[in-house]
View 1 (cartoon, rainbow, N blue to C red):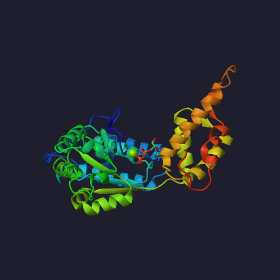
View 2: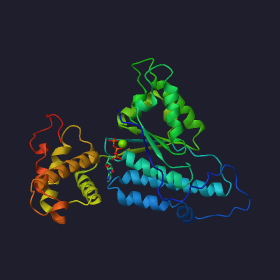
View 3: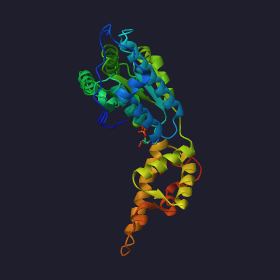
View 4: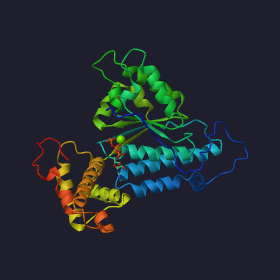
Length: 325
Ligand SMILES: Nc1ncnc2c1ncn2[C@@H]1O[C@H](COP(=O)(O)OP(=O)(O)OP(=O)(O)O)[C@@H](O)[C@H]1O
Ligand SMILES: [Mg+2]
């Protein structure tokens, strides 16, 4: 909950985003093809990157392709003067921790930027504490400051339901919600809000906040990863850091995952990343202890079975134990 506010950079190396057309184009506008818009905006590269870089998530990738299609067709319609209203693009990403919501939101910001729906395409990720003050009069300036930072990009509100605390009548979260609602309506041509969190809590939040619910145009549900997908994600992460499993370590990691998934506080790909960080620490200690040996490239890149099997996950039984790593 107490993560600091952080700002992630916008599209890297992309072409500057074209302006969102505000008025109907001149009568001389000619018909354009989907291919032309995809090429000119370089959206195709982002869609391919999403497909290629992220393991699994088939339903999410499909929905993003659908949204991109809608936006491209909207652009073609605008080009022929068919409609000049900015589409509503606010979204809700639901799913368990570590299912890729933040990662996909960053790609979404890039797509919106390349199609010219937001000026900069950066992502500002916040939680309740970044928006809501502790004392009277503190919330509005805090929320407005965050909105100012996010303008021209995507505001990603993690665990958005904590903004609403029905048990506390005077909760300042309500003030933040009201400001957000206004801006989501009036400045939707330059700010996209993505609410993220657990599905069931988000459903309750929307039932109590119909104004928020009615402003969300797209709901994307992020499924948990299968064990195979987690294994695959792990290998991708290692590859990205120039490490590899030996065959034995690969098998050990499969055993690790099977146990870890069944334990409390399992957080999908985030748990995979944490497990690999700890395995790298063990590898480093193992190598560090061999003071006089010259370390080869293979020594330095390979994770051995013992780097995985030394995890406490292998000592524990059942799911009643405290969380462990
Ligand atoms: N499908 C995937 N393929 C490869 N890596 C992934 C995938 N999904 C997530 N990751 C990686 O796992 C980590 C956690 O992902 P991310 O932060 O996007 O999840 P999240 O749903 O926002 O989690 P949280 O709810 O904990 O904030 C990141 O390092 C991300 O790069
Ligand atoms: Mg996240």
